Image (tube, rainbow, N blue to C red; front, top):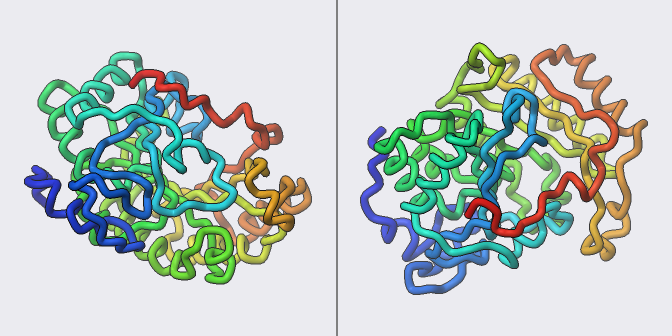
Length: 306
């Protein structure tokens, strides 16, 4: 696929980049469902140690946090940037420079966090940076609510996909993310990601250089939906992907209106899900130790590195 992107206006003046299909003219400065116009906004770009071991390694992942989000979960762990309350406007040329700066700091990869609403600008930035010596893998870190035809644009741009699969039950996704069709889009997008990267590949230091890791962060009280998700992933993709089962859900003040999830998950809930995954036969996976349910694992979005 030819990824020399030609004209951002094609996708941004009647925006249908995500399943919301809001048809906003972002080129003219109007904000889409994601809360963003055509202006590329980044809140932080720094080495990050809190991803899966094969992503963070010993040096850290060169993580770029974008402002805005097309999903808008009520419990969002990165609420300030998802709501567009933090970030600095930059050009695709500057983003390409940031990639190289992080590479020069020893980053194992460039980790694009919630990037879907800026895909045209990101493609431009990657192509520009590769002409100037950029050569480490690109990780696409997403909440999973993506359109497979848009993910196809990233074939040859992205090396490692790191999507969430948050929900299977549409009533749950509707309540917490206002999208009853979440599983339909997320599962189809993951299928396209796996088509592009059908086999996990690692370098000599154990860093993933190509592949798919699907994350599932447990929500309190929804163990059965979590089990259904893990079962679906393993039965559908087997060992073609890694599955990361996360216990780090942290109830922040803005979930007070949802009392059923206004708590941390219990050790018993998490252990039952992990045991279920082991019982299915999953070997390519990651689990989290205790201590991840803390605001200290949420970085400060202060414009570092931007």
